[in-house]
Image: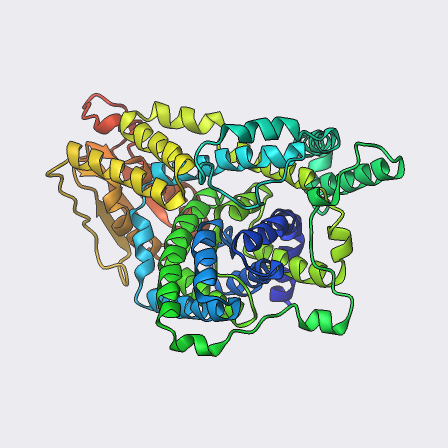
Length: 531
């Protein structure tokens, strides 16, 4: 009875966020399939499997999986080279098997070595890209496909801006502004925020449909054309339903090219997933830690299932995950609800979904983008000093100018440069008793602790049993990176209280700005216990 009650509570609590993610994911799934040169429904199938299969198997509470923009170039090239989508599906199965193996050999631990300023820079960059890429859709110009997250893939084309200005559609602009107004009012009016089962995104979408239908009935020039609406295939017979699913051509397993494509997808998809999981854990209000090895296994199974029934390869996706977090998701039930809604609505009411203006969905995404790239985040890292701010800004600029993987690589390289420059001979040691049977655990931090030590400390804190006693001693520590400091604070202030862990923090300062060795710094916590 308790499990049933908990499940029903989880569904009720997470239905609004699942609905928001569904609305965001729908055009993205279609757009990515279109850009990949794959059947339109293959993106939807990937989104359904990402929600239901990966959502069920993963223990990430915030991340949402689906077809990824970062894989479009690989998929498009592979389908062209192989000559058939059915052959490409074999590569997706191979990629899933490789990811499953990576999960079992515990390759997911590499995510612990991405510093927080790089992860936050990636999120801010994605926010900027979302806003810039959705502005054309918001004004009625749909030359670019939904889900494209690369700004300068074809260089800087100034004629594009001329086309953009000439394509402004007054009806789309009205729908966009009305939708944004509804979303802002819903977020800021207390009485409306209490209507959890009626999220602002749904009201905005309904208003967008209603406005456009009114424009049509009036014969107004403000009416939005079908090219600026969601476009799903509408099955009209049993044969149409059967044709929705494409099965792989298993002869592809005899083709060496298929294996090379599968390995490439596995590597790129795994890295993108691990980056997104790290970002999703940062977005989680409860600061829960995802098992990245389990996530790789879940992604592997998801990619195998998706490819078997004609879906695109998937990853954990930043845009969907951030929309999920911003909509108030508390558990993975939200991701599963989004998968159910995709399945039910695509099969039963595609003709209604095809009435949704892309402008109203652009409004939802623009606000998601703003929350990721809000000025307060830049201000926060500015105050932390140049050793945190420069890698953060470099990551933002690099991701916006190139793509997610290259941008994160550049940010990570700059972070490592500063660590090596400031601490060529830093030693780190973690002194602790055996965690299994110890009543008292003593963690003594070294003189200087960088983000490279994050994995060891994170693993130790994760393995501390409920109702135990822990002392974390930083009295001899002159520098602690923000990543580790925030992780310790989250442990002491959130998890320790929930699990009855008695925490004593010694010698922590208010600031460790720019590797400062200021011995006169104030003590942050000299003796604190989390009851």
